[in-house]
Amino acid sequence: MGKLIYLHLQKEVARTVTPEEMKQIRSDYLGNAQLIEQAKQRLANYPNDETIFPAVVGSHCSFCPFQMICPKWKHQYMDDEVVSTDL
Image (cartoon, rainbow, N blue to C red):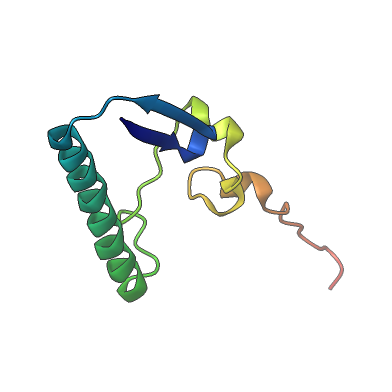
């Protein structure tokens, strides 16, 4: 019996996992981790490239704590521009 822990849901799910399933799960997670590490390296070289970690707008955005730095939402957190007539 294996145990899957869904960190984002803060939930443990116990179920039978075959060695083949566990191997595939591990491979999938390691593959995703490698893709993230590669993207982080590209971002270090090109910090303004918003295509490296593209923002995907959806209903999940209303719960996101990173809207203030997200290219799709950060405009809502900017102060309004003020034009002064006092010269």
